[in-house]
Image (cartoon, rainbow, N blue to C red; front, side, top):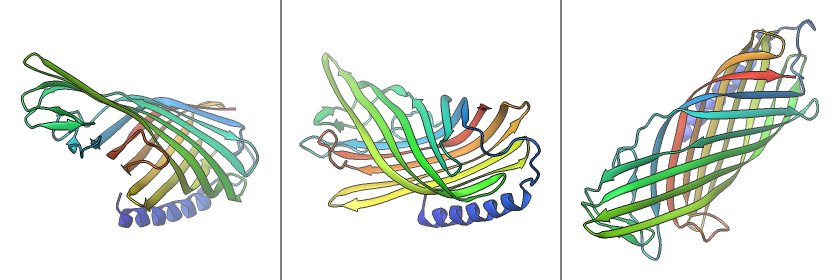
Length: 274
């Protein structure tokens, strides 16, 4: 996401929040925004764009998974979110999803991956698996009867397991890389009950860090609505974006290289509140 789009998202957040404030219902009938727990689970359909380079003693090859290796851009995975209102103004949010991808292809050009050269013509199996784990603390600076808005700070752990196995004639080679891309994000959020059965949420979080060759640039956003067809159970639809760019990693010798990884799409889910 470009800086221009980031600013547009902030403006959109403010406009949407104002709209939610004006439309949120004002009676005490029905449910308020303060159940203790919300749990969401459902089908997440992200579109993915991925490129990476894994260096050893030498500079590795930049590999575009979708453009060069033919990985599918579209995927269907499971995603779950938990919201715990620990007090009227404080909430902890947890998110988990697992993205597993692999592809068998014949290389058209040489590829160097963690100091192993896979020559053109090699038949390779390439895997790129991601565990996405998020934990966020939210504080409400505004907290009215059925809407709130505030700031957040959160930890992200993107656990990447990737590798190549290749064979050319009778020569077999393999190389792998396993690492965690940690990050501390700050952001803004808002929630409002538009009616006693219709809940809307929005969040925007990010991080930008450039220090001595180490670069981390992350932008995340999520917007959605949930309709409660019963007192405790609802169905919802949201749209999430996640853009990661990592050049090397701080405090780690396990990874040298670069990863550009983005996934965004619709999440259809069931949600429980209690």
